[in-house]
Image 1 (cartoon, one colour):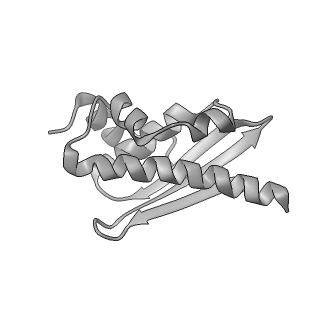
Image 2: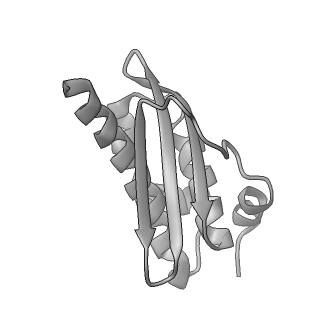
Length: 123
C-alpha cells in the first residue's frame, strides 16, 4: 500500500522533463525490475538551480524521482550529495519494502548527475 504522498507525486510528478543543455546528467537503471531513471541538473554558483527527471518505471519509481528533485532543488551540490534513499522514502512518508530499491535509484541518479557535472567541469 502506498502513502498519500507517494500517490500525489505519482499522479502529479514535479520537475518532469529534460534539460537539453544540462550541466550534469545521471542515468541509472535496475535491470531486475526494468526501472530506468535520468536526472538532469543546471548548476549556478554551486547550487542546483534547476533539476528535471525522466523515468521509465513503476509508480514508486516516478514518485521517488519527483521527490528527489524537490529535495535537491536550491541545495548546494554538497548538500544534494548528502540526500540518501532514506531521506527520499521518509519525505514520501514511507515506501513498501519491495519498492525501497526505487529510492536507491533516485538517490543514485542524483549523485550520478552531480558527479557528471564535476567531471565536465574538470575538462
